Image 1: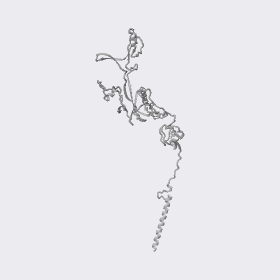
Image 2: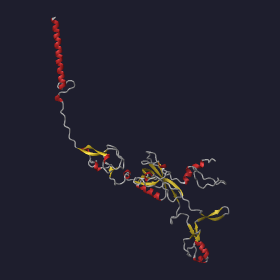
Image 3: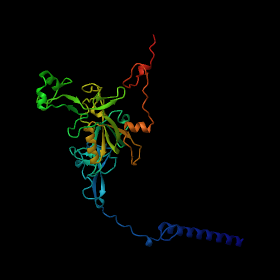
Image 4: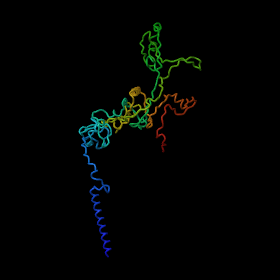
Length: 384
């Protein structure tokens, strides 16, 4: 009986000790002084450092997308704080009033800080000049769907410029087209024996009055220069002169190998309401017919190319000389050098194995002097 009571007393003491130890451990864990349960002694914790005082200034950023050439208004921009130590002098704008009324040189995305190089004054020149690399120039040439790959090339494309011209032979002294006109001159003795009627006939030839004055030494007849040839049928020499004026000879060659397109059509939008003429005029018409409903903003009759200054002069000369220019669109990313041969009638005949047709005792009817492709209506059968 006594042993049982003693055992219960021991159990009670053990329980009390466990509760006491648990209370101590809980106190140490909560106070952080015991180093238990991941806690560290208070004496080992570093003291918090004070936050440094950073000098901040305002800079202007875009609050929305701003398209190139847009006049900036106050609702398009806002300000944010920026460390003064990281801001380069004279780069950013510090006030919204400084950028309001300026014109964006480039497309500006939202949250992008505005710098002095990104905007310009409203009257500060053209935006197109910023797209021309240093040392290069821009020149515009007239185009049509037939000479510009049906208006496929756009800004940023690269094209090859082809030129075709007509060449004729000239007298180097007179700088006139050959063959020259010839005049027969007479000595004073011969002119005295010629009657007045014959003299007038000599001075006037083919309905045109001879520019030579009626002078005994220089009076004569006006004829085209010719040559003597042996007539095989009569075995006699005959004098042959040209039946028509000299025919010019066509030659085509690459003028510009690689030119970047700066713009298709007009740059300025201030004249968008003004009408423009058609890109190609009707053959035989004195002036091109205006295109109703077309404005300068929609006009595609010109292409502006970026060229070297020397190529700009060459292209300008060819335009004034009447050379026909056309564009050939280059492949995207192709920057290789293009080498071409000048193309003449003889070159085409040789390269494409074209022969001159034989002279036959028969031909098609009706006579064909000009090549014209039949129109669509020519293929439609008119039913009764």
